[in-house]
Amino acid sequence: MSEATNCKSCGTAVVGGFCSACGEKVLTAEDHTLSHYFGALLNAFTFADNKLWNTLKAVVLRPGELSTAYMEGRRVKYMRPVAFFFLANFIYFLAPIFETFNTSFHSQLNYQHYSSYVRPVVDAHLAESGLSLEEFTALYEPASSDNAKLLLVVMVFALFVPLLIIYVRKRSYISAYVTAAFELMAFHLWVTTVFLGLFALGMVKLVHAFGGSIEYLLADDYLSIPLLLLHFWVTINLGRRFFGCSWAGSIWRSIAMVFGLQFALVAYRMILFAVTFWVVS
Figure: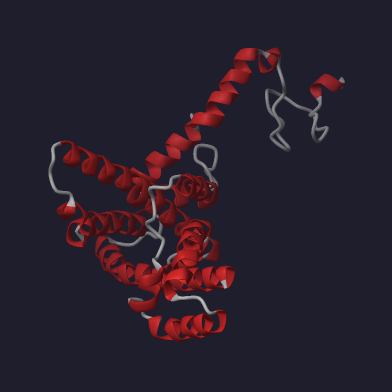
């Protein structure tokens, strides 16, 4: 068999356009044209790839479909849950308007469940370094903002714990719960952070343009309603579609995941404080 019919990567005989052993594409004259390169460039800069749009639609409209397809081996149509999460994390990292998962130094000192342990550590460092609270806060805040975006993968594994407990024995493999955690966190990044954040920003600018007050738009009571509804949407569908729960089982587990999400946030904020404090101290 001639060299032209063998895979360039693994040497396997190729029938068709792709190697059956490693998946390598057989290059054609079309692959060397300028139009091909411009098309690849467009995909790189606009993410105009069918896999992205298919994955985004599945996660938003049919939560649990991405994890189900991945665990069943239907992986051609969608992005991998891990890759989809890190793409959302990348966008979140680049956009300065999103601070959803950051926690201010003032909040870390005063309003977290573990604040009583944080305050003595900070006081001891201030006494040793000679810095004032205001000076240390000025160092801490920008570092926390960066670390909050870099450490988001911690939230995935923090969500894995309540998922494993609440949906115990619903899946045979531990990896299934990790996969579900990546999809759940990707949903929160894409929908409750990016999409909802852009919508809120647009509403604020619209109200500003008409000379109205934006205070009521930023009130926690108003913001918590869509967040809670989105949480129930994604967890109920995840329970039904991925874990195979009944409607009743999905609903009570969705309510339980409110506390699971709170657990994950507390764990994430603790780690965020510890890492940021270590970096700036």
